[in-house]
Length: 454
Image 1 (cartoon, rainbow, N blue to C red):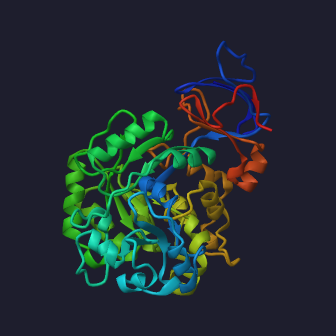
Image 2: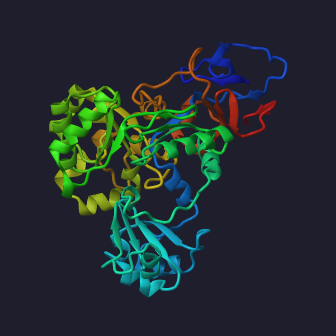
């Protein structure tokens, strides 16, 4: 593929020949026979974006599920309407996502029965850690006598398997391509070899054109089309066990795998840091989320060499609730970005979709502005430049903190925008994506021969 008249972020106008890698870059390149040609018309060209923490199957399912949390649903009445009008999955279940207690309190099976007593119904909390199931649903699961229908971490507990529904990734892959995303890291815990094989099949078929990387379980190996990263480990404050985490970290390191630890509270971060200090750290180790990081940990994280993969989009999406519900002393410690970079901590950005908005450009804007829906600024000292925000979505799967560049020899994964660099950086908007290329092939739009970006 030949991309003509693209503008690098440093202002140079270039033509690019792209295959599996960028094979040529010059002021002017002539089309070769059979080569697709795209006229960027001066638009900016950047490395294809990589979202470093997503949940692919959950996102695909969420795209066809009822949304029952803020901002879509905000009170008991609208919650009830959303469930009663929801379209069942192919297996007859009603699936709803994004619930938060601010809508209708701590609901249980009886609360759901009062709304929907005929069809099996499952409602996922926006944290992803809790499912609430009504009585018909519990009966279908073989748990008719469950006391309240509140199932915690069921997606990773083989004793409480929710009914499987095959959600194709085609729609999700197209959405990601439209945002300029060329790679994703699936952070779903407990992914098996079968899960990885299915992901590879989805990639090879074109269902998921992005390059998939997985934080799969220990013992799972890479297959053509899917790379494997650290082992995802979930922590909950009620069951924190330093010795167990230290042992798990050591076993993963001995197996030549890092660990990627879910840390959203101060306690979880403290135990993770202690475990890595005891077990010895691996340069592939990651902290997922880092929602709350106190000053005392900044230098420690830098010394450990771990990569923090965080989601500043939650500042924009949930910032007003944080300002209302979290102690004022902790506000500057939430979803930190600038202070981590300034102290030398390895850092990458992600969206955590579907639990966060999957648009990476919105996450970049949140990192730059730190604005809430209500117009407040949460953690102004954590703001970064647009250039830095973009670079934090341009890392590779194996080195999320190290931004790729548009130069010969780099992977042929690119994103071309309709706007020149200055405007693109000022707006950071996904609707400026004109072309997405993975391995030299366009994934958005699909037919680009002699296309003009404007």
